[in-house]
Length: 408
Ligand code: PLP
Image (cartoon, rainbow, N blue to C red):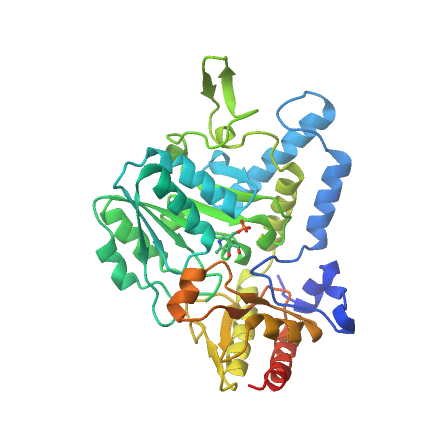
């Protein structure tokens, strides 16, 4: 298997755009990654050859759609190394997956039971647990962050106790790029009998996973960050746990039998997929998962580490700029956030946009982390396999311009 970033780039039609007459340097992959032709083709083939609702009618198209949808479930099970395709629940995204977990797993928690999150979380992994606190009277605790923007796991043990039912943490931070030491979390949670959920929104785009090997209980990810479509995500859970959990949403196809008096529910995963699911999106996500799995993972990781190193080195020459997150390449993914004294991230992003460089500026749905670092927001570059050194150089050249324009 060879890895050629230029050839890879050519697989993404949108990357040929020239915003403001400049080559596009798309460095906002943490928000949404772009879609390769293989995924667009798979969606087109499905919508023109197998579009129908699933698990309802028995005509040719309906059966083709059901087959495609279940094949997608199998593909995602392989991508995550789930024990069984029934452990894959399709949702509308990572946020929806976490809300499902909070409602369903959460409905079995008692007042005083504890859920442990962290200050590093995306709001998607904070707010649903706060809402659960309002519904069930649980106690929500949060692991602080280190000055390097990592989970302060030395503080984790003291926050765990016999009432901890779930440890719900990000696998990779969407702000600092820091990777969580999952083995340590699983060992500590296991010692008090707590379950572990990982928010994999930022990790899942970077290659196949081994949820069983990680020793966790639940995992969530989002299709649009994995070179797939919008409106699709996955909640993975160990089957024996999913089977004990009640449904979240009620409606069509999640039932076994309905009378006006009572309803019995379908087996997992159907129990959690009320209504018409995102069918073409699941097909697209499966194509994306296969596309990622077909890359030379080692070469891609080495390429992204080189680019991240080049970016960190380039940023180090700006005196008024502070990287929020790990300064090195150890246990980190290619997400780099920085704050510039006296400059608003939106202004920085707007100037960079004129250079064709797409970044994200703001709080990144991680306000507790911004508070911990005493900033209102950061500017973030998040890299994908199709990025190259031109993208990094354009970002650094654009920053030179931004510094001058903003008088920094
Ligand atoms: N968790 C993390 C770490 C994220 O970065 C994001 C999106 O940025 C989400 C959850 C939410 O994903 P979605 O908006 O696709 O539901």
